[in-house]
Image (cartoon, rainbow, N blue to C red; front, side, top):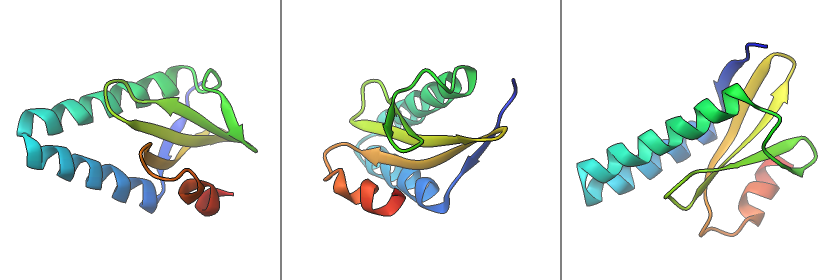
Length: 99
């Protein structure tokens, strides 16, 4: 099944913040961050039901090498990216926003 990928505005903002932070350290690190995010998104698109459910219908995919998770849910033929979450933050932050 082919899914349409969507991002919430919050997820886009979080992704941009992460990229800006890592790019400020080094352009190469910023690019590596985006590559790892893209690889995780590709994995989600290929096998959206493989990631574990963490609450209600929200699933969590771990980003390799960086302390981030991608929170998403599947609705009909869409994958909706809800958060690109830095794991050093309090998880209550995403829980309050998404639940």
